[in-house]
Length: 115
Length: 111
Image (tube, rainbow over all chains, first blue to last red; front, top):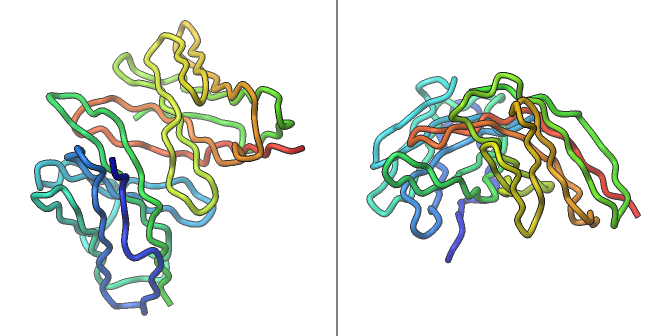
């Protein structure tokens, strides 16, 4: 079974630009979550997608948005980039069946640097 | 989500058991205790989870106190490759569950 894959691995953007990060879920998983990890901090929950709809959101502004596709892959979009958006962005997939979430598998992340 | 408290850092000699404590005094009845670890520049890796009984798998053991207010992750024979940041997280298993990470414990395994 394949794990969670994220692309690109590294990215440099200029303040004010827009960025799209991509994630392929682990085979058999139907839910995807995104996390932001600043240097020296633990990952912070951005949002989760289940059945192609946002299913929970952390304390992030609307310029952070996402999509989940029918094949359960996902995109994270960030508009109007700010210097503080520089971080490791992690994608995690899981299987939700019935009312139970069977636990998360994380990708290796995309390192975004905003200059 | 309940908050957890972990020591910021610990050292362990290679081959010895590493015991990582976690306090979660506000845990609610439907919340599990999860442990993840993050090796430098990689995504978090699931280790183990439990509700109230002690759990063991090929990576580690999880000891949860009877009142569920604290737990200990045990790596029975630590190796240099176990050097990582270890996160203790409490979360339910509902469809909208999320993981709330703290700053974790940085475990340094030394020769």
